[in-house]
Amino acid sequence: MPSADPYYGQWWGSGEGRDFYQEVTERIGNPMAASINRQYGIDYEASDVANTAFTVLRQEFISAYIKRSEDPWAYLSSVLKREMVREAGGYFRSELTETVLFDSASHTLHRPAATIREAAELTSAALMAAAPAIPEQILHEAVFYFAERGHYRLSHVYTNATNDPELTGLGLGREEILAVANAVLGSRPENNLNSLIAAFLMDPAFDPKSSIRHRRALTKFRSRIDKAHHQEMRHLVG
Image 1: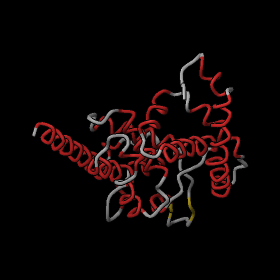
Image 2: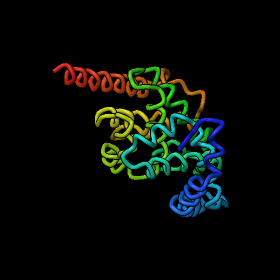
Image 3: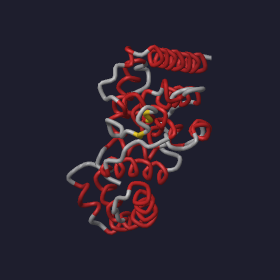
């Protein structure tokens, strides 16, 4: 599909464009609208998802990644879900932040100070500063991938991610994927205490350097990325 003006809008108005809009509506829009409505209590319709596709596909890098992905529909679905949740203003609700958000003294559960999108962007920036070897947009996509899945069982998230075309299609290897996962969602045994995104959710002004646990997490992330890239270079040379 074309993603550049002046032909972008014209293509969507063509027979091929209208067919694609309808397919997005039926294939992604209907189930996604129902899922988000149940989770966030937002009154979305399938057409809202399809209209969002029109908006996000104008971005050249998204169209390019979709074309490169082994499962373009799955990748597009993930991108659209992120945008729909962002528009809904949804907050990150998960087992990951449960301990961080629970105040044992007052026995109340506090709402995060930042949205999931804001926290993911801050996390992405922190990781980019720590290990600039990964292209910025690819790292950004990987961080959002894990941010969206923080409410799943983390062991399953890590296992599934290493084989998910949405990440491998970006050119990320197993070690790089796990390095991003641990930095974003934290590492065992207490994920919530060294998760970058959990920290940024509670305080958008959080400085990872102020926390020993998070400094160690960033150092470990940098070390794992450097090691993965050195191994890749040796493989190419060999």
